[in-house]
Length: 526
Image 1 (tube, rainbow, N blue to C red):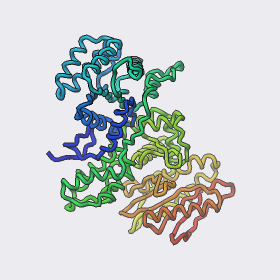
Image 2: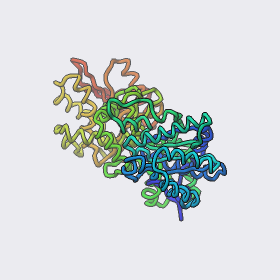
Image 3: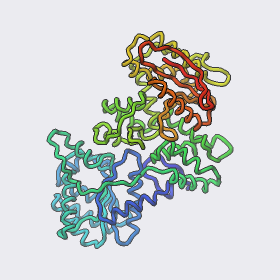
Image 4: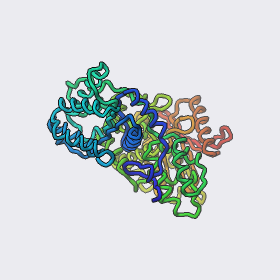
C-alpha cells in the first residue's frame, strides 16, 4: 500500500508521509530519563497524539521501560463522578491500550480493575506494580481536557504528585514519568474546572517542569517528508525551496504542512503531466486552503474560539484589520487565551502576531465578511465593475483614485478618531467587491525582516504590493518609502502603491507619482 499525506488523526510511519521528528523524540526521552513530569499543551492538531504514539513505541522497544499510553477522549463524564468509578476506569483503559501488544499486562490490569475502587487503593496498586515489574514505568495521558471538567481529576493529579515526592524521599514507588497532553496546561485546566473566585493557585501539578520542545516543523524538518515523497514517486523537485515556502505559509504548524502537501499531491499535481512540485504549487495550495469555500474542523474551531470570546475577537481584530502593534504579555488573560488556542505567538520583536499566514488570511476573510455584513457599508456595493481592469490586469491606480474620491465625498466630515479606527476597514470593504472572483488579496504581516506590510493582490499571475500607512510627518514618510521599496525587492517588483491616511485638520486630498530607490511608487492621501 502506497503512502499518502495524512490530515486526519494519528500519523503512522508505514502509511503516511511524515516529517522526521526523531530529534524531538530524543529530547523528550531525555526528560523522561531524568524522571521529569510534564505537560505537552499545544493547540489542536499540532501533532501531540502522533508524538505520544512515537514516544510510546520507542520506549517500549527498550528493555528497561514500560510505557502505558491512554486517552481520555470519548469516555464521557460518568467515570469522573466519584473515586469508585474513576479508579477502575483508569485501569480498564490501560488494559485496553495494551491488550494486543502485551496481553499479560492487560490481564494484570483487568484483574486490578475488579479490585481497586478508590484513589488510595489505586495509589497502592501503582506502587506494587512498579515494584513488581522492575522496570521504569511511564504513564502518558492524551486529551486530558476532553472529559475532565471536574475536581476528581485534580485529586488524581494530587495523588500522583504526592507519590512523586515520596519516591524522591525513598518512601514509595511510582511512575518514572507522567506526561499529560492536551490543549490546556494544568493551570488553565484548573481554571476551567474551578472558575469560582475562591480558586487556589497552588497547583496539584507544580512538580512538572516546563516543556520546551518545539513541536512545530522547521523548514529543514519539512524537507525530510518531501524527500521521502520524492524518492517514492521518482521525482526531483527543488525540495529546499518548497520546504521554505511551506514553512513560510504555515510557520511549521504540523496539520497545515500536511494539508498543503495533500492538496498538491492529490488536487494540483494530477491535473498536469509534469509531476515535479514547484514553489508555485505551494502558492496554489495556499489559495485553496484559505478560500471561502473550504473549511475544516481546525478552522471551525478557530472561528468558534473567536466568536465565544468577544475580548479575544477584539484583540485579534486590532491585529489583523487595524494593524496595531500589541506587546506580547502572556500574563494578559486574552493574550494567554489566544496563545493557548494557537492563534497568537510572540514575534521576534516581542509583539503579538498571528501564528501563521494561513490563520491570518482565514481570520482576515472571516472578519471582513462579518464587518461588511454587520456594518452594511452600502456605499461600496456595486463597485466591482470592469472599469477597474485593463488588458494587463487590475488598475490599482484607478482603485486608489476612486477610493480617495469616495472618502472625500462620504467621510470628510468624520472626526480623526473614527477614521483612524475605521479607515483601514473602509478601504478593505471598498476593495473586496472589486477583486472578488477576479483576483485574490491577502494579508502579508511579516516579510523578510518581519516589518509590517499590509495587502498583496494577485491577478492574472501578477502580484501587486499595496501598503497602508498613517501620515506622521515627512521623516516617517521617507522611512515608509524605504520599507515599501524593500518589500518590492523581496518580490522582484519595481512598482508599488501607498495609501496614506492623514488625520490632521486641513489635510489635502492629493496623489503623487514618486520615484524612490529605482522604484515607481504611486501614493494617494485620504
